[in-house]
Image 1: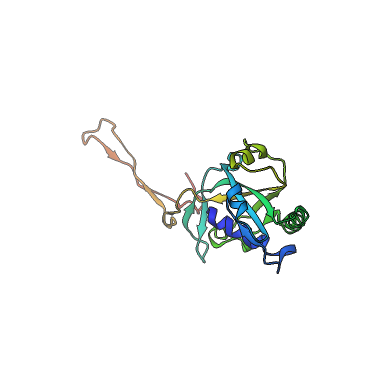
Image 2: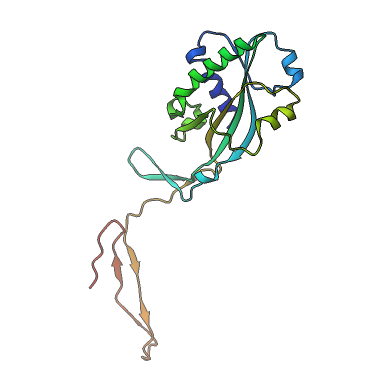
Length: 215
């Protein structure tokens, strides 16, 4: 699912205020060696953290119906994961980098809730909207200074992007056929008679969809 999110980010950043700019979108770790090889403007989306959003965890199963409204399969709820990206701009002049970051903000801010119809197919099939947090309060365990230190680079302006996506953790499973008949119940008791038992009259109970009458 992560590579689908990468493709989604690429599509978003190539539109909006950056449409037609031919800016390269990369997903590399912005190390010193990588930055030294850059010879054209780049927006880099470095995935630095993956963790489950446990507050979104759900129980139970959702019904999947056919064209006649009959439940044919059941689907357990997905697990939601927060994918955190460090968005940086790389050009020869700081002023140009700032313009790129400003254009990225203008492009992403109107997209803070991504509907299913613009998501890649595996995500769109779930029918769920995906939240995108742009430059929000950082809640991950790692600080930006620690990230840059681990990369061996110099701290520079960046935008923190967090996309919280559903991940189907369990396969769908078939549902049982609908109940169309009543239930037959037989009861018997031992009353000390010579034959040892006496069969009571069988009683048909109505199917769950029909109101049952008792006497």
